[in-house]
Image 1 (spheres, helix red, strand yellow):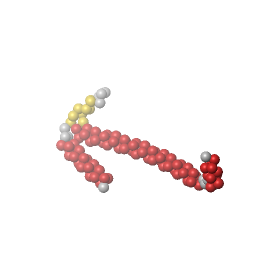
Image 2 (tube, rainbow, N blue to C red):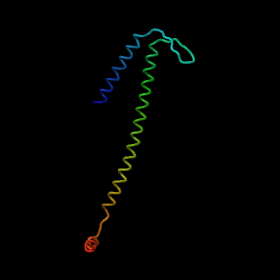
Image 3 (tube, rainbow, N blue to C red):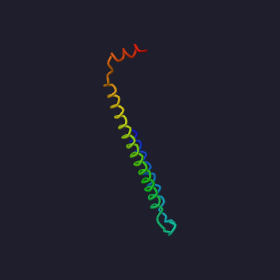
Image 4 (cartoon, helix red, strand yellow):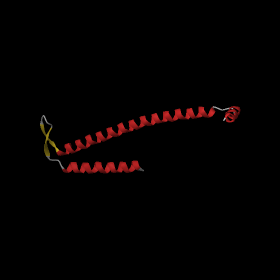
Length: 105
């Protein structure tokens, strides 16, 4: 359900951005630091939205990769602890050893 709401919100935001960009078609000067170019404002708005989407998407992919790596490490540690626990459970102490230790005390 969360994915559906995210998708609906994303589509709504894309529609809102497109309407805003279409309303602003005037040519504006854009200073790149080394050159000044006159381009339509619609391209500036859509370009900025695209760059923002790429940045957010890249961060999301990086975060997901990092969490997957952490999950693999934790699963390996859990497996190791379960193996150690099962090997400890398989060790049996003879009853004679326990009775002789208690009689010494």
